[in-house]
Image (cartoon, rainbow, N blue to C red; front, side, top):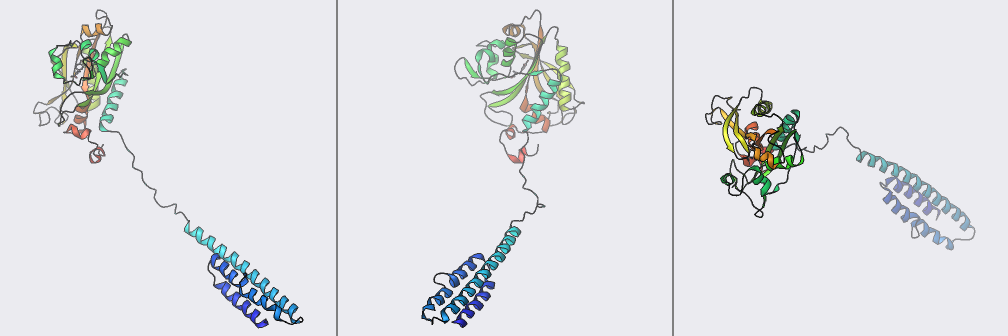
Length: 339
Ligand code: DAH
């Protein structure tokens, strides 16, 4: 029996060193020291020993058990340290690896140009005004000197909601809304979306954006319009830009004009972009019609004003040399990422 105990001790010592995980160690421990273990099996045979041998073997067995237990504890500590080391190595973070790049969005070309236009006019003392896109016929047409059967209504194919309510076809109704709320001096621009029943093509869309301008004060003349709008054109398209005013007709201004700027592409020499003219039209404007001032609650005997309306899409297309308006609405990243 003594030899058997020694053999168990020797084998245990060897096997313990061969364990490579705490799990393996635990099953080895059970295999030797457990209830059905090898050592326990030997202890069960103690009954067959003589009374003299029994205490000697008992002591020997206890010694072996204590020895193996301490070796198990030792090995356990070793394995735990090893596992810790491995885990730390595995969890090491390489702080020199480049980070993940999250692509940042940026402004849409229409917003880029609108923000520039706002900056330019704010710099000249203008404020920003807004009005509703679902508008009354009164503000969109009637108050602007376009009574129900006025032929000029036909130039703006209109989405009617009811007979008296519509999607605004222009930002000009904001003129009336501003004048109703505020006495002169008035200096506002009113950017916003407008709607017309047009089919989509390279230069048309059922919705687009305009920027309205309105200045009302004592002694405002066409000279103010010309000076302010020349400043605007030069700031937006460059100092070399020239402007030209041509007579035109709008029901809400008298006199009315259209403003051209020298072609951005050829600088005025004539090219396919300006159809050989050297000039491109960018806006309509004029002196606010006395009837319109009156409809806004302003005395046309005391005050005068000028107004203009400009298409944001057109400004943007000229600004970035874009030849198809649909590109501005299709959200194609290959296009948008260029700005
Ligand atoms: N509302 C006009 C349009 O959509 C543009 C316009 C012309 C606005 C002359 C004005 C103006 O304020 O004075 O065609």
